Image (cartoon, rainbow, N blue to C red; front, side, top):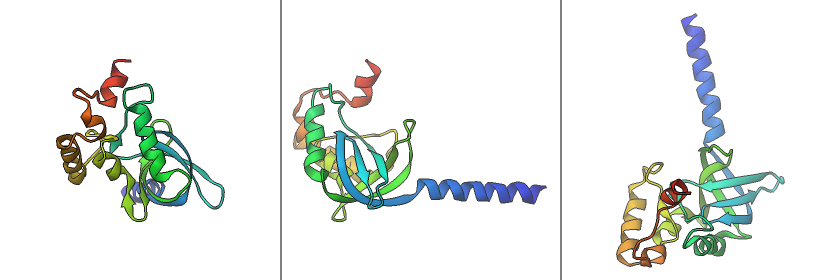
Length: 156
């Protein structure tokens, strides 16, 4: 009986791993805001991607439209690779988007278009990029008191 439970547990964990650790290659057909886009693969499968480790201002928030523009300029109508880590509560695939082997997630932080989402980030290099963006007053860090998206949502 014990072996059965171990076997089922291993099978279940490997299925979860396969579902949550994958790579998508496709074209960006839509950018919703500064941290969400749609990628369509060559077989026509549509994937709604939530960028991992970062959080961009909401569209109705100060800097929201600029953040969306920043992401659009980088990836709209381009072929990207997405490393998917998991799915969020809204069933969006959460991942890191790469264009020419460069992390778009990191570029958004570096340019002050998004915050590091501290609750979900374990990448210390992103913290460093954000610190530099703050010092240089890039993007939203030019604002004397930018409001983090999670605080904005909490107050709504």
